[in-house]
Image 1 (cartoon, rainbow, N blue to C red):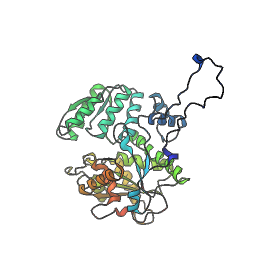
Image 2 (tube, rainbow, N blue to C red):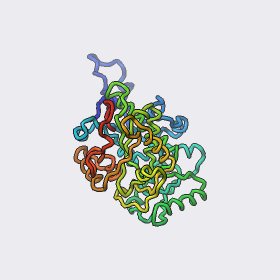
Image 3 (tube, rainbow, N blue to C red):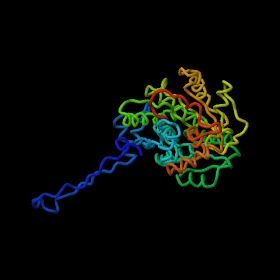
Image 4 (tube, rainbow, N blue to C red):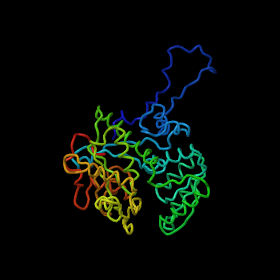
Length: 376
């Protein structure tokens, strides 16, 4: 488990010991103060007051909307994965975000900023985690929210979006058609179009994950220890962009490589990096549908190419694309459930399989890592 010093809520103290003689205060005047029990939302709001862990998010915007919409999530050590890798492995549990994924960090902030700047509605074109994050943010902010989804979106996802107060519009057979319709709808209502991954404000929100990791690793190691590597999964590249931005903000950019894991059949970033320019997949054939962007964000690809070419002395770049298969991604999900009683989707399994094992064994980008920091 994670060290108590890093993650435990403040101790809740009981009432003081009764005095040895009766109190002279009339009974009706005595009151018992119940100490406030810490909550994730309260702790995250406290971050605004302290000014830390929110990176370059506009504090005035966040404070004016009642604090960030995302919550601070645990960073826990995985003993089973550490034994496999031969180095400490920590898991950042963003599956515990209220919307169910890391997407709330960036999309929540993007929605807050849009409303603060005068947008009167929110429009999303994602039937996945980004749409759920937008719907949750819209509900919290009291903003009318429309989510346009393709016909392939399962009915239970549509119901979940509606349960969060969003209007669900079904249009087109694939995401590109749904997105085009969302653009047109947004023009009609004068709202803010919430892109699933290609927005600098969203990246700024995602960058907070690195600030939290830094705080927690300092508590564990007693000093500012950068990770030996951060492993993430990549679809369109929004989380990758946020991690790279966060590494810049905390001063780790030149010391911490990022492994960008994808499943074959949803590997648009690796395909583009291999080619040295933007490439579009003819179809998404992987079961990891959350990674199902046909092409990465052009701006994120530019970041990746720049850092993939920046050498760290071992012939490996600071962004290291890595492919696994659906089979090994799903195996990693099962292993995660066995080891930690947390069930995640195959997109997350792509990152987990970098340690648990891929088609060629463990991810070669994790061999020979420098420093004594952990892999996160």
